[in-house]
Image 1 (cartoon, rainbow, N blue to C red):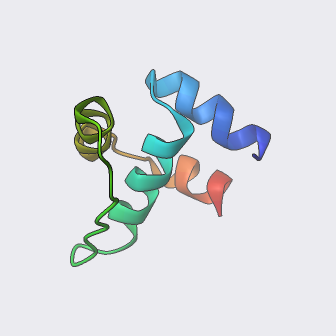
Image 2: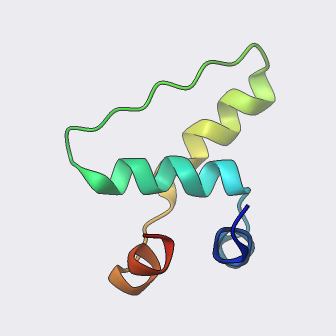
Length: 63
């Protein structure tokens, strides 16, 4: 994992996986990642990623 991913995720109080989903969602308004899971806790974590809004500077840091 890149240090920037962990640092930014921690700043949002999120996991690196949530930050990754947020990054995918920010790429395009028509992007709809569909991660699979068999656990309710992971589903809730995935859905919460939609609330993460990256600034342009944060986006560039991850690019």
